[in-house]
Each structure stands twice: as structure tokens, then as C-alpha cells.
Image 1: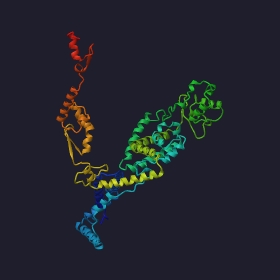
Image 2: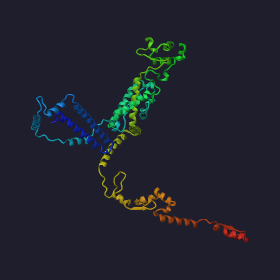
Image 3: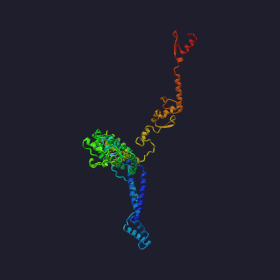
Length: 509
């Protein structure tokens, strides 16, 4: 019954609206695990792609390039070649509907809601390598092997490579201009994009890269791209400083020969000149460029298939700046993705360091435990915790057994006025709190030292009364030199200090 163009249009709009509602409904559900979150993101991504393709079909129908939609609307209005006949068009359409139901008497109405609701339970197939652990870690072993076996790389450990692969500015420009480095950068960028699309399917990577390209173009024009600040300019201006020989300082070929064969060779190669021959022949070829522009120089002086450029007697490098710009742009994109995947890169580093201390059996056991833990966590969160007695929670997030609750006396409440009427449940927690910060702070506010004498005392009045008695007892036991210090006279009589000083003042001693 959906053979007509208008029915196809209506069904397309209905599908778009249903998918929009499903996306909202799916995103309202908080996924319990990272795996469920990934499934949810891919489901939403697939529905968005379906909406996009359906909308493109609807736009094509509304553009009506073949006038099919216009003709169908006219036919519904009864417009024919002979004139307008609304009733004949109506009865013809009614006849088609009856004929359809006569041929399909057992046709049932399909509830589209059930079909679309099944999309919420779908688990999309996402391809991850075993090392990637379902998107938690990066698997860069192939790129690592390509790096350490290249001229621009260095023999380092895999864990060290994870630190340096996102820092291409440390690689010299001379090594970046090679085909090997370009292939490596293409493979690296391709893998990071593919991994990012699998782990973050809802991110608009095209919009991110468009912003990166616009910023890169501005920085490249100003020569402010990180790692490429001192490189050559695009239109034949002065490139890297080590390739320049200012010929104004040399008046003869003999003076230019003193530069050395290697520098002459590099300067000639930068201009596209031949680099062979003796030192004198190289210097003569190079010295010709001081007074003759390269465009007018005889072709026999140039190497096969090359052509240099120079200005004002300065020898400049004839590099392919378009290719260098492409490499720099790939580096900029790679750095942006590394910033977005910074957390995953750190987790990968930690995982690599941890695996270095484990055997194969231990790694397999840990992987199985992680899988089972994820499953049990999702099952536990789905189940509602039944706790009618309001028992305390244990280390596993479940109520402790009732016998353990009674054994520790957790049903007994102890209040401490010194702690601000704070309640402690169980004898053990009550005895322990006398050494904790809350009780110590309360005693400090009262100006009383928190000693063993004040254990089991929770009332402020009792604590102050006890402290007063302790102070009085300390006053009675205090050393009193007037009464307890002894003095002896010449005859051997013993007096205390007060009596001795009184008799001495009276002259009796």
C-alpha cells in the first residue's frame, strides 16, 4: 500500500519522528558500565545515520526533478487529459484499496513501535583487537615496529614510545621530508581516527578537523606551526638556515672552495645542481649562480629532473613545500586526536607497565576477572537492595548479616555531648571515638586535655567537674618549699624553711 510517492513521503517522516523519540529515550537511560555506554553511543549513531539517509531521500522527493510528485497530486485531484473528474479518481482509488485487501485478506496491522523498541536492546557489533580491551587501551604495536625500524625513529621500549609518538616536533625536519615518515604519519593518523570513531561515535570528527585546518592555515602563513617555525617558506623564500651560503662574501671560486666539499654538495643539491665532480667543479657551478639567475643558467649544470630557484646571490633549498605542508597538517590533526584521547593514552601506559610485571597466566586471569566483574556489577545494579531492618552496609555495598549486627551491638546508640550530641552506634565505635578528631576538638574547645582520665565521659559538666578535682588534687600534692624544705642549725636541730628563717631573724639561732 506504500507504492505511491505521497505514502513513501509520509512513511519517511514517520520514521524520522520515531527514531528521534527513540534517541531521546535511549539517552535518558544512564548506562551502568563503559561497555553499555559504548553500545548506547553506537545505537544512537546508527539511528542518526538512518535519519540522515531518510532525510536525503525526502529532500530528493520534494525537489521533484521528474515531476512525479506533482503528477500524483494532480491525479488525486481528478485532473486528467480530458478534464477534471474528482469522483472517478476517488472511485478508482477505492477500487485499488479493495483489490489489495481482497488479495491479502489475512494481512495484519504491524505495530511499528515493537519493531523500533527492539533497537534499544540491540548490541551493535564493534570490532576491537584483544589488546584494545573493548576501547579501553590503544594497540600501537605495528606503528611502534614501524617507528623503531625507520631512520627517523630510535630503538626504545614500547612504553617509552607511548610518550613520544604524540611529539613529532622532536624529529628533525630533514627526516620528516622522507617518504618513509609520510607513510608512518598516514598510518598513525588513520589508526587514531579509526579508534576514535569506534570509541566516540557521537563526536563530529569532520567539524573538529575543519577547525584544526583553519587554525593550521593561519599559523602556517605566519610560520608559527609548532615544530615548523624555522622551516622554509612556500614561495621560494629563505628556508632552513643551514642550507644557505651567501655568495656575496666570496669574490673568487678559490675562496668558495674553502667552504668544504660537503657544504658545497648540500648547497648544490638544494638548488638542484649537479653534486658530482671535484671540489673546484662544484664551486664553479655554485659560483655561477651569483651573477646568473637560475632560470637563465644552462641546463647541463642541473641534475636530471630538477630545477632550482634563488634570489640575491643566496643559495636556498628547493624542497617540495606542498608535501611538507601536508605532513605538518597531519601532525596537527594527530595532536588534536591525542588531546581528545589523552585519558586513554594514560590508561594504556599504566596497563603496559603493569603487564610487564605479570606472567601470561596472570594476565589471562586478570582479564577474566575484569569481564566477570563488569557483568556482576551490571547485574547488582539492576537488582534493588532489600534492607527492611536498615542494617549498615558492608564493604561490598550490601547489608551486613543480622547476627554480625547483634554481635557488635550496632543497635545500641551512644551520644556524646562533647562531640556536639553526635551518635555512635555500637560499643566499639563509641570507645574508638575518644581518640578521634571530633572528640579531641570538643575537649580542646573546653580547655581540657584529652587524657585517659576523661575516657567514658561524654557530658560537658562531668568533664569540667573532673578537671576541677584534678587541678585541686594537683595543688595539694604540689611541692611547697616553705613547709617541706629542711634546714639544720649548728646543734643539729632540723627545722623547715619558714621556722628556720623566723628564728634566724629573732637572733635565736
